Length: 636
Image (cartoon, rainbow, N blue to C red; front, side, top):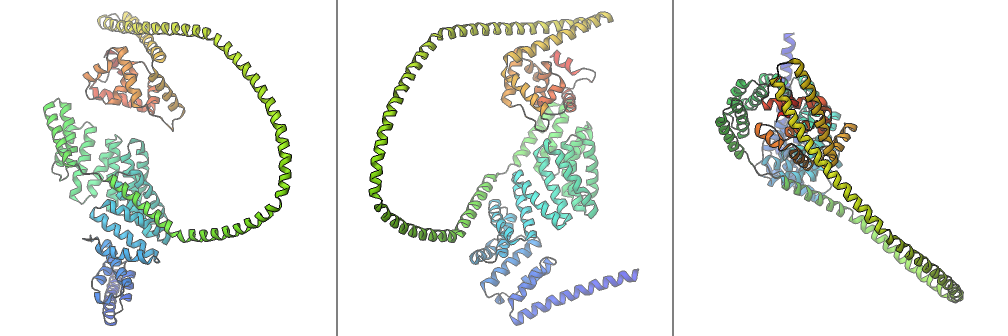
């Protein structure tokens, strides 16, 4: 077995030396014979499998052998392609622009023209000129599709999608990644497919909670591919996205397990700070504050201001939990300072403008390409018009011959017209009679106006009575609140169990009456509450197409509830500062007696999610576990 391995190594070494000898021989032969085309063809054949050898060959070509413009353009394009495949960033775009202008001028080699625009875009991408990158990639797109170069099209989709992803144009990036995924499936490129699935999952994570399930599905597809390939780099990418996803989903235990796995796989120390930040965040969400602070301190050594800023968020939250508001304010100031250092100029508008300009240029080019076809149609149309004129002249002669006959027919028509005019006069008289009848009816309708005024006065009286009923309901709600307070005090003071049970029953009945009054008053008066109920019913009937309550409806409803509860939200936010805006909405719905199932339909979520939100609100309130949430809200 050892001899077999030794023979295999010797065989591979022999093949390597033979390839090297052939390469040197080809260089020498080409230099002797002056055959630049042969040398360029050799470099092109080496490009897919041995880009380093192709680059070495191109760098050692004697430039005197490159004589014709076609050879020069091909040499520049191959050199730029070899540098790109060997991760060498060109310092200028002047060379590749020569190749691009040449292939645009001849306009008969679609594949080389597509490659020229693509690699010009790659040069701009490496130099950070995103608008120019978008312009060149969009110019290359129809050319690549026309040449049917699937590998180049796959690379084009990937790089163009990545530029859109960098500029937060997530939908555009994801659409391109979907096209790239279909091509990768056809080519059975598992490594690139796994990386692409991770990129699509990252887009779903950035889009928010609604896309977390899709991100989870994509990463679960990518992970077995990375494990099967035994590719540590891809596996680190998948695990990194999984720990970010579970941190965003509020599942710190799973996030910690993937973080530990990533620490075992990650060899790049510069990436450890981001892992430490995720680990600190996961421990904080698990209420392990000491561990969270420990890993957050590790992040302060990171060169990234963004990482330091997020570490300060953990320090601030832990300090607030401990009641050390001075330290929390200190870390908040540090966070703002770090975030100011991360600000950069967004170029999304420039990219969209470059995209629009490129598409317009392509449209103009297509128009020019069809110009010859339009000229053909123009010539055909001119010929048709000449034939039509000749035909019209012939018909004109025939027309003069029939003039006399037409005059006779004219006289007969005049007679028929006179007959018709008499009939029309009769019709006009009939219409005048109908108009008089209608005027008489209009006078009768005016007499009914007095009756309509009486109905309006009755309506105004009914509206006044409705307003009085609403005021009575408001007073009744205030009385119920006072009765609830008195019963609560009596229950706390009284020691008799039977008396307490009786008081509790009274309290429950009063709360039900209060909730009924709340609902009746809001249903009769509040347009915002009616809109809320409509959205709730829609979400109940259409669970797959949930509708969100607009912010202006929430603002109006909260204001109306504050009027009925004498400033409930002010007391709530004043007592519990950590509550979010959605938490305040949730508490207001509980305050007016809405059930948790109905609240879940209002927010477009499940009942289980509504209970989880209730528990999260109680944590932010630092409320004791035995206290019921409804009672806590009622006491505010």
